[in-house]
Length: 150
Image (tube, rainbow, N blue to C red):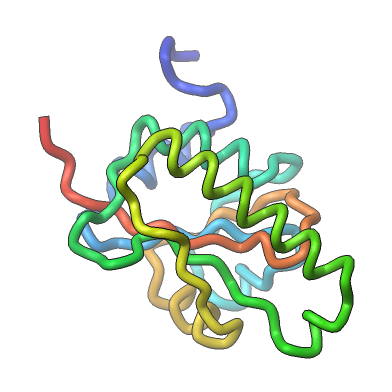
C-alpha cells in the first residue's frame, strides 16, 4: 500500500495512468460494456463502480485542457430513452460524474455525450479500457489525459 493513493487503484491501473501521454484516452466500461471486443489493453476492476474509481483517479490525473470536452459519456440510443428506468439511471450517473469532476476540476466543461457507436470507435483507439463492476446502464465514461505540470 502507498499513502495518499486510494486502495481502489490497482498497481496495473496506476501503471497505465502513469504511462499515458497527453491526449491519450482511457475508457471506464460498465459491467455490460464489450471492452474485451473493442480494445486489447484491458484492466479489470470488477466489483468497483465508476464513480468511486473516478474519485480516486482524478487527484492523480490531469484532464486534457486542450480538448473542448475531455470527459465523455456514452449517450443512450433513442429506443433506450423510452424506458424511464434507464433514462433515470443515466441522469443520476451524469449528475454523479459532474459532482466528482467538478470537485477535482471545477473549470472543466460539461460532460459530452457521445453516440453509442462512436463511443465504441473511440474505445478501439483508446490507450486502455478499465472494465468495472458498475451495473448502471450507460455508465460508460472516457477521460482524456492532459499535460502534467509541476
